Image (cartoon, rainbow, N blue to C red; front, top):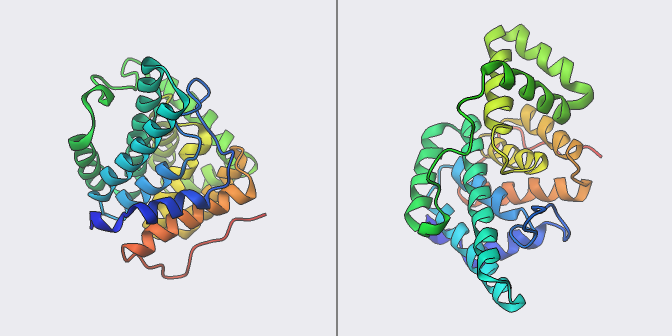
Length: 250
């Protein structure tokens, strides 16, 4: 199904997201529009791993064209390209908590097959030497930053369902996975989460994380664009929803 990720379709998805979206501070040319994270995750979570390398190559060529036109120095250009590759890989990795790691594994293997040698990783980006108590604290901090006023009620719901679930979501989910590597911004992680949840038809959590995207600085227009991009990818590959997809709350 890789041939469904046509240039015209990918360009149409990019056009959905309003101009002036989040970017990396150090290398602003690397990802001025997060459509590529949303799209890659939506394809991966919808079990179409073969489309993700196509998405990456499309975005990489577009980035290179822009760099050439702007006369970007080779060393800076490579760093921007690495940021792009890392953000796609990290978005797919984070989505595995929601769509299932077999899909993430298949996607990252497929992506690695087309990844230029200079854009691959040689070691984990997460610190394996951190004590679990550090992840407890950092996980709670990120969880509260995302959920804000609803943090206590959501954490209480998870804890009451099964205490190990509450611990796992806080420490492993938010501490190790979502906040464990300095690759995606908070709002970009929310975008990846939303894209995966839409693909797996989890409306309660879609609603939570659309709100969390707003908490992370996304405008109403941007959050709506994330929802639409993920839905268009999922619909294209045959995903259906039992009760629809929640709208973004104003």
